[in-house]
Amino acid sequence: MIVDAHLHVWRSDTAFPDQAGTTVSPACDVPVELLEQYMDEYGVDRAVIVQPVYPGEDNGYVADCAASKPERFAAVCVVDPRADDAVPRLEYWVNERDCRGLRLRPKVAAESACFGTAATFPIWEFAQQAKVVINVLGSFEHLTAVGQLAARFSDVPIIVDHLAHPPELTREFCEPLLSLTEHSNVLLKISGLPYYSHESYPYHDCHELVRAIHHRFGAQRMIWGSDFPHVLLQSGYARALHWLERTFDFLDATDLDCIMGGNANRLYWTTRPTRT
Image (cartoon, rainbow, N blue to C red):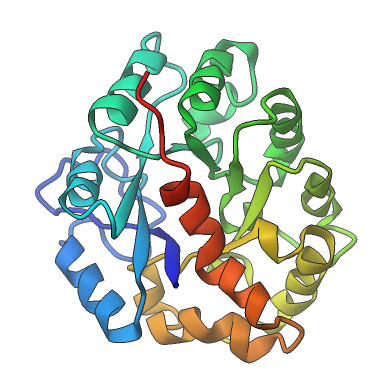
């Protein structure tokens, strides 16, 4: 089974409070039907639809897409952790709209300062209770807090999006990322390579880091995502889909099954959120 664990869809009629930093313009319509065309063409069985930055907290479209085909799609919502009613908002998206993940975004400047603070612990407590997968869109400066949260909420699966956008790609510089291996609930998402690679496909400067991640974490804690639709203007979907198997001959069939689908399937479908 192949599961694309990181991608976005949106409607252009949504109000976009933040249009910066996107490869594909948020003014373009990226409907779920377009995603399905790519999935069908390339044999991708399931997809995790992550709420993009641009529509803010209006998770309605991603939730509707997942609800329309729950065996094919799972939704990851966004809730502003600074809000006084952050937990009730999250409860709504999980319990009423069946979102199976939450995306916290310390990389967004307005949300950085509160990441990992005690004021946000109720969000994590609900995630622990409701079996919500937390995706972290952050930078290397946030990795210490990720480790502290992983230790405090050891039953919450935490996925680090885009490898935390490493500014350098050597093993030595990336040790703060690699050291998260001591927390068994942390997984690293192999995604978004064009954002931090200094080379074009096949991203040779990322190879050493991926080898180190596999050595330290193992395939059971690595997870692949295409970053659709942005990848369409970067390497293309097919190259993103086949990059690991074409590039790293040490990955055997069992490893690839885990990274390319098994881990995401376990987190988002086999272990489903419980109604609270």
